[in-house]
Image (cartoon, rainbow, N blue to C red; front, side):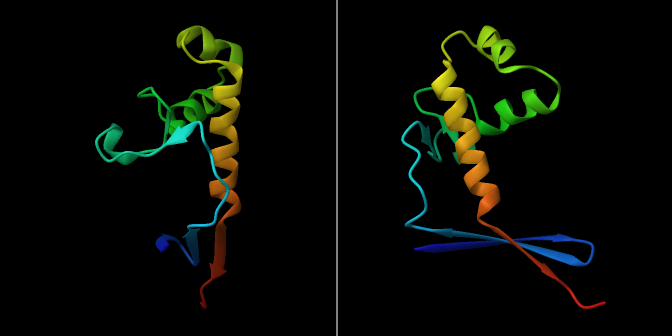
Length: 97
């Protein structure tokens, strides 16, 4: 199975390829019945996106764990690994002017 999604940014095309043999993330799951299928920490409704946005807003990992006490450092690190792998799978193609 291969899923291809396209995102257009001005003159660049961001191509995100997703292959069935990509790295496994046992602590991250996707379920269309939970949070509209966004990747979440397994067994929670906390999305990887939420964790990354909290970091972008200036919160520390300790802050995030304090806000969501059922999270642990390995769970937050799993979200980082998932996000890093998603970014690593992106291919940017420059469009002709």
